[in-house]
Amino acid sequence: MHISTKSCSILAIFTVAALLRSVTSAKYSRFRLADVQRSSTNNVPCTCAIFLTGQFNRFNRTEQPKGNPGIQLELMQHYPCTASGNKQCSNKCLDSIVKHLPNSQNVICATIDRDCFRERAYLFYQNCAPRWVNSNISAGKEFCCQNDTPMRCSLMAELIRQSLRENNANNTTGTSSEEQNVSNR
Ligand SMILES: *[C@@H]1O[C@H](CO)[C@@H](O)[C@H](O)[C@H]1NC(C)=O
Ligand SMILES: *[C@@H]1O[C@H](CO)[C@@H](O)[C@H](O)[C@H]1NC(C)=O
Ligand SMILES: *[C@@H]1O[C@H](CO)[C@@H](O)[C@H](O)[C@H]1NC(C)=O
Ligand SMILES: *[C@@H]1O[C@H](CO)[C@@H](O)[C@H](O)[C@H]1NC(C)=O
Ligand SMILES: *[C@@H]1O[C@H](CO)[C@@H](O)[C@H](O)[C@H]1NC(C)=O
Image (cartoon, rainbow, N blue to C red; front, side):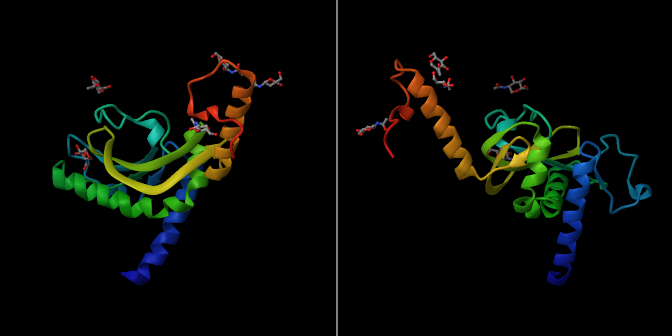
């Protein structure tokens, strides 16, 4: 098991790289199309995606995430349309994506189509129904992106602080914010 993990990782990294080139319709097909059960009425195969915290509502789980997923993988594989099938799909997604998240900042920043500051990546999946379900699994890492490329969060924080300082310096009337202390270090 451990020996094959490495080669799987490499395969998956290539997969992620390929995804960048065909963002919307990436297919990770380890299984022949013929093997896919097409008879099922709810036939959305297990599909995985990464959304950042700025893209979904944590308090309303029926609301669908907005914008492009950072990464999307359609596993050409069907699982039962039950709680345990959902669990299988989400575990499979976990194996396929999340382990590689620490290395996929480039992919994510290039794909989300906006800047982000200290957002976490969450794993979502679809199984049977065409609705994203939040697996509640996240990469511990925080992502920072500017102009489609990754940026060190500490550097971005400094830039944000600087621009707030400039704003405050021009506005002598402001009294409310915690950014008030312009001159402290
Ligand atoms: C949650 O989002 C759904 C879909 O956008 C909406 O219909 C529903 O009213 C929302 N629920 C709450 C409690 O806001
Ligand atoms: C994620 O957590 C929420 C709230 O804690 C829970 O309602 C939901 O069922 C969980 N989702 C999954 C897929 O475990
Ligand atoms: C100053 O305050 C105004 C109104 O409160 C706000 O719109 C503006 O963005 C602030 N900054 C500058 C540089 O004017
Ligand atoms: C603040 O004012 C200075 C000088 O008037 C100006 O150059 C600068 O662009 C202003 N900063 C912002 C954020 O508006
Ligand atoms: C600003 O600095 C003063 C002392 O320099 C401190 O007492 C105060 O709590 C600070 N306020 C904020 C909002 O950080």
